[in-house]
Amino acid sequence: MGNQPSVPKPGTKFQVIGAGLSRTGTASFSEALRILLDGPVYHGGTQATLAPPVEIKSWIKLLSHWPPKDASEKKLVRSILAERFDGYAAATDAPVSGLVKEMLELYPDAKVICTVRDADAWVKSMATVANASTLWFLSVVLLPLPGMRHFPTYINVLRKQWVHLYGEREPMTKKSYYGQIELLKEIVSADRLLFFNVKEGWEPLCKALGKEIPDVPFPNINDGNAIDALAERMIKSGLVRWAMFLMTVVVVVVSAYLMRTSQV
Image (cartoon, rainbow, N blue to C red):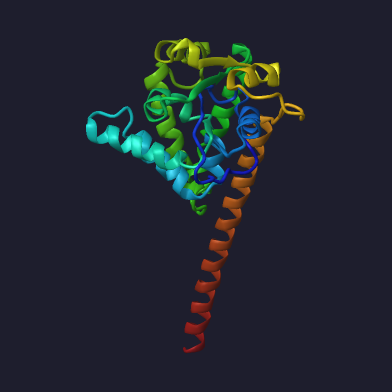
């Protein structure tokens, strides 16, 4: 997860579908793509939590109709994807990683790149994320925040997508990790699919995209730290909003009481 949401640039050609699961270096990968493709990259986690509320609400709507049961739902899913990615050079992270089939239909010329890491380390990392995103009090604390009030619902539809694709809920296991890899091998032709570890740096990524290696270090963004910081910031913001609301209520009640007693 990055620090700032991306802004679409009209006329940008969509080139890369990021098929790697969350916590596989998707934030670093997104920044690397931004540099190589010279265009904005849509990182799912960042856009859903830090961009305007339309982002997270759109994903909730899409995933509530996914997988599509009929032509009408298929059309809806396609239209939301086209709207969300208009003006972007690439998209990464969830829920994109679970919508590769639909993305290929929309962008038939796009390259599919799946970020990977050690499977055991991924399982441990996902356990931390799952614990943070399912705290029982989140729905109440986040209620005053325009976009994040939808976060618990967003997590629920993401969970539905995950169960459909990999057949398991939290805690995630290596079954999900390797399930994504096998799924991609089934639906993406080998000449369009790259499995990439961000620790490998620029060379394999640039080779796959036909780009020169840039004269800058490969990005190194810690998703875990970003997620922890976001959670802390959002919880504090929610509590502050609640405190202000309750203070306002108290002031109104006391003022009404004083006015009433003064008239007696």
